[in-house]
Image (cartoon, rainbow, N blue to C red; front, side, top):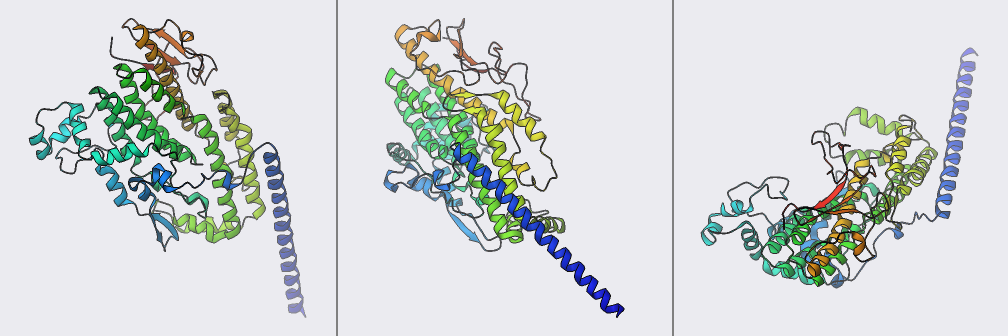
Length: 505
């Protein structure tokens, strides 16, 4: 009798606990779903879209697509990894082909530093002359001549690229239907950085050699490639594209410094530069990151539970702990979370970005508000780090201000480049630079940090200095942004963003 009573009590206890657990999950799932539905409806009423089709570039005919060239089409080639259950890059031969028309010379004895050098700290002439065959054919060449001789070895492919810039579209064939969406790769951009360095150095050499029309054609190859990158609904490709833009600004500055462009070429170059809008692309890509990548990934975890978490663990590129007991245990514990908590994480991240991040960049007004960015950083610091209802939202809201600052700095340089084109056009007509920017046509861009005219003065060497007030919105008389190499922090003693020429007239 006593044994029966104990079993009955245990059964009652188990029944009660099971009922409480079921009620707990039911209530939390209902509450989380309600919070997410209300958040989504509120944001959609304010014009936000959670439809993946509104973020994916539309398909275009291959014959009208710049990226359908064989040189780029196979960069996104993948193969299925059965162990990890994902597609992995299979584009090594495509990268090798892309590199073959660029700067690398497999027969050169001198090593090529990594990453690819982009300035005059490296002698390309010495690099190519270390190839005995090249040295025998071209013993006495300048730096620019050595580069142009190297590129002339693949003149047909460069001509094909130039012809393809006339195609109206430029899209990489990215598969955005991958599940989970956080595994959508950027393999199609492998090798493009070094190719852009090649474009920049080729254009620079052409400008130095007096081949301005050809240099502009080479720059247009980059502009067409960048068009494809700028349409991707993810922040990483936009950041990669921005680093490439910074490289291409160097030959643009060289062309203006040498006065080698005529008015028609200046107008064409300014038009190409004006098509790049990193404020608009940031707004688009960060929405894609949150509304499409982050939220769809959480939906995948919510649907597939532990198996989804372990699959994400297996795709980790760090091999040391991906199958450790602690990581398996962490995945198991996370899989026990109510689905409603995942919905709450989705709502929190979406609300955070809509409230604190999106309003710091206004592409319609061509403005960036650093003070609003600082508010977002403060709000992030107040997110409870160990709350299960923030466990996914907290890293998703991991605000890295340098990313946005870098984009805004490069956008500023693009604005300054457009104004420099107008100043160069004025110089061609008057053989001097104007006293004020107000003499230029009215369509000059305004400083994204202040909304006012960019700052300008003529210099004693016959040139000019053009600058932005920078993130601190203060005129520091054109002091450059200085970066500490050890921790990548920004010196606050003067953060003006400057365009000027070292060479005197």
